[in-house]
Image (cartoon, rainbow, N blue to C red; front, side, top):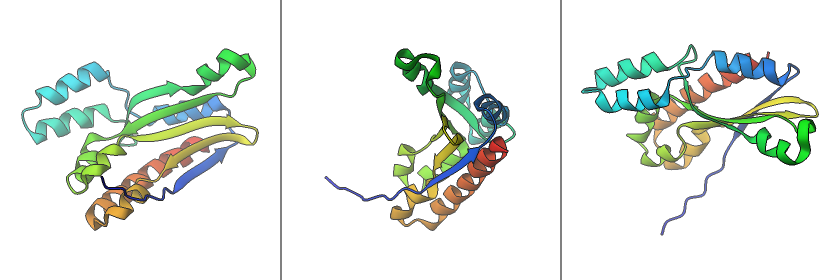
Length: 164
């Protein structure tokens, strides 16, 4: 059994916009493919070039797509009712970016797609993300870290734009 210590760096931005305004802006930049059809198209792709075409057709203007959305606020509302804060956890990513990291650092597959949390708090709507570069730093692969750094920049730009 091997253990590895990983220190995670969290990026967070707080918005004065409403939860609905933030999530609408965020959603608009993501691709929202039918996941059953997407998986079938990925499986049916006969080459990497065909896979690239499938993925490019699935991502949004941010170069990312939504894999799943979990409504954490729905669970909170079961006890707290309408006064419960809204909270959504998104799993987003791009399989082509994931591939570039996983081929260098297989454990990167544990972190991709990435999690983004958008939630209401007393001081505003928070958009939070754990930086991929921090997850991959302990593995010491400069190429994988460069890919992770680019992914972090893409996600941070997306979150910042949705917050403004």
